[in-house]
Image (cartoon, rainbow over all chains, first blue to last red; front, side):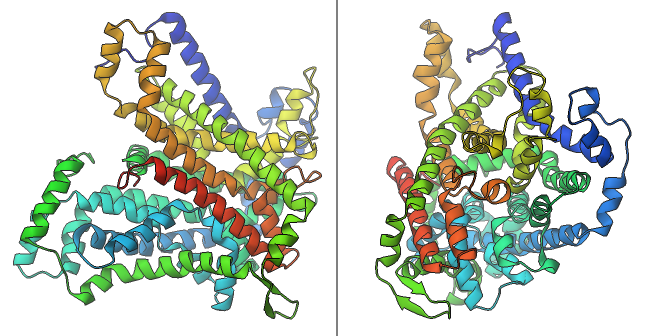
Length: 284
Length: 313
């Protein structure tokens, strides 16, 4: 069905206009990223000497070097990226299980207070986390959790949006699939782990990426809840370095490039899944 | 691959099936089983999502002394807040920011969606390009654009210096700082909302366009009479999602301007942060949190009103 009447097709002038606009937008989106990557590969002095006037070498390095990357080893960055990966990884694994289990209950079981509890899930799915950062800080402070790995992980485990996404998928699984297991005397836990979860891998994948990225890119919460140097995550570490007097731009560029690649990889690899699942769970 | 026969069953037939199922086999598990599935997520949501809201509301009526004693303060925090010129500046900045950025982001996202929707070549490349800035965290976007907009060493000013415009202050200029914030957030956010709008475009029936074409409708009329009305729900969803995020705009302000220059980027969220961690005035911070929460709730309720129950998931 390529021969459609959607707006903006076929007419040659419109065609050129459309592609020009797309190229311009793609350039605006990609150029800053490209500048960052190229800059991470050049010596810092060179970066500054060409900044005053605009020439080819303002963008393209004269000499390529990996010194900005090797230089990172002597900073707090390796520790910070390790913290980020650890926090995001643990949250992802436990979080997917916790949210999928709750979604399975909502989709499969009849129970009292199902409506109000589901409303709670809906509410938390719609409320941005930033809105409760300050009262949450007071709460975890009272609980004695401040400045620990658990304060970075535990509050982020349950995720209303991920529960909604799983519930929608589980609700579409025909009950006959479970009946066989029930007749064989399998517990609901077995059915969940060996029947429901295996067929749900597209949602597991999307949910995992979503939780991992949310955690990996978190800034506000780690900034206030885990201030000590050993617990600093990559996002906070980089932001901290920029405010230093005479910040080392070379190291900033290389550390940012690494963090960007880690965050972008899951999207690029699973682009089709992610886009479809997120878009449909948002509106369906 | 996700479109298994399982997933493609229509909501209506699924609803019918579930009603039948309830009659034949009410899936009522034992109390213990139910708790095993529900308790972890629900208790975490109650403790780390619901309780903070209660703390925020309760705490906004108290004040803390330097010794950590909490006393009931009534509406004192709010009346202090409302008497504060800086608070009203923050309200102005936050509202101005939202009034501009939400329509702008969604407009750009819609243009992007329309561009990559119609059949053509290299569309995957363009979709991924538009989407890529979204994979960068808000904090890193702020750091990167702060370097790009640097008055002396930034690339943008190196280019502008060659033009009649000359170098600009951007984040250092009182009149430009908020605009620069809007620019960097749009740079990051437009591609994200494009995905939702694109999904909305794909849901519109092909036949509507064919019928319009037979009736001789121009592309502009098709856009106005078919695309836009059909996309109403999608637009509403995107608008609410975008607004709730932008009402709480914080990281770039913290990283780049700290509310300045001269309060021109002092958003409510940044002011709340400052009240708690710089001035250690938690009563004020929590009352600011409450005001932000109610703004978010108002926007979310608007969505509830427009969606029919059960559809808004």
